[in-house]
Length: 93
Image (cartoon, rainbow, N blue to C red):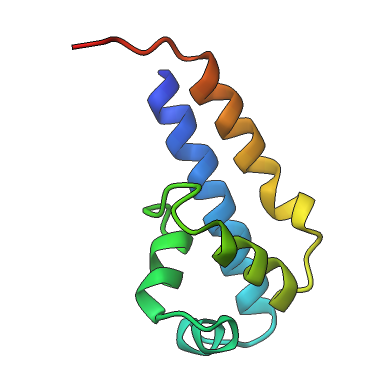
């Protein structure tokens, strides 16, 4: 598996955590979006792994609060992702 696939998997793992926690509360994506003050497409993006970390860090903080998750748990995959990005050599064009 290449580094890009691993990074994408870490992003998706955070999305699955968000989706699982939302589902356990019986909330729709729209309800979660309302509770954290964003639009439903933002929730869809995070849950489906299309929102890159850092896009809106405040959203992750609000998700942790509303889902009653320790921020560290929500950010666990983020930290792994950052390590991957920092350690991946970047080529200049």
